[in-house]
Length: 380
Image 1 (cartoon, one colour):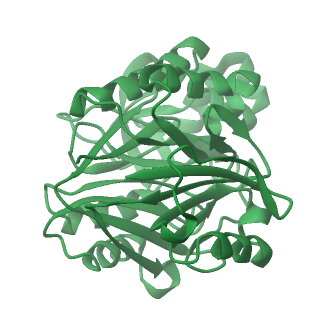
Image 2: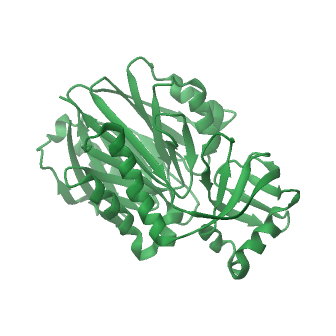
């Protein structure tokens, strides 16, 4: 396995690292994460395609690009790979062709023969697609041995349009994936938030999809404002500081849900993933040091799975973390780098949702406000 990285801006590579001397003509897979305007530009796609003419090219828009230990905006962070013993298959579906995101998830995974399939890495439109339902659909048809990770495309802090493309100029509404086959590929993953829960555990008593109305029979928005105190006057912006911890099943660990908007008229709250009636929830608050420590813990989790430093780590973190951490954002990338060491290449992006299991090799879940890491290494 050979890996090379490049940073694209202004119709050229402004940075490039290729210590392994990977011939661009022999690259088999390219992942590119970039700003909405750049990633959807025909000029950008043609440049990348000309540089890597024989590669499968997966591109998606971001809320910030990760290149090495840097977090950058208005670029495209590119990682190119070649494999000696691993084979690849790519696939794309369009959400407009399906009645639900659940059905789209089923269809996407069914395009992959699952014998010898180790990993499916998914990049999805982050606006039109219901990430929770997409994950449920994928889990519904995947074999137990298949790992699914990935994320939802971003659009800075605008939340207007996101773009994803497989071997063509990215568009809205697309869901793309690459499947990795072979017993020589080592994969690992980690996903940790680092938020602090506070207050009592409560039960969702009225919700529809990702819209929450009542907790413990009380108006959820009023209850939320009570917990926010002085921050209630700063809604909806302050909601990023106070996500929700949700336990979908008593036997599962909780996952984090970001609040996207509030509706004063309907007295409801809209989240970046489903909030099922009957689920258990707690309010959460940001602790800067714990957020950064969580990134380090996610990397440590990856190392424990294979006991080797990976060749590549794909980092997908949440736009909410980036907005909260501000000028400390790079610290969570540096924390990951310290765990893996210089031999591990880092790439990735800030997203509208992260896809990863909670436990090693379990079914994937949709996360918000987490640092999610997917690691690849190919044994001799």
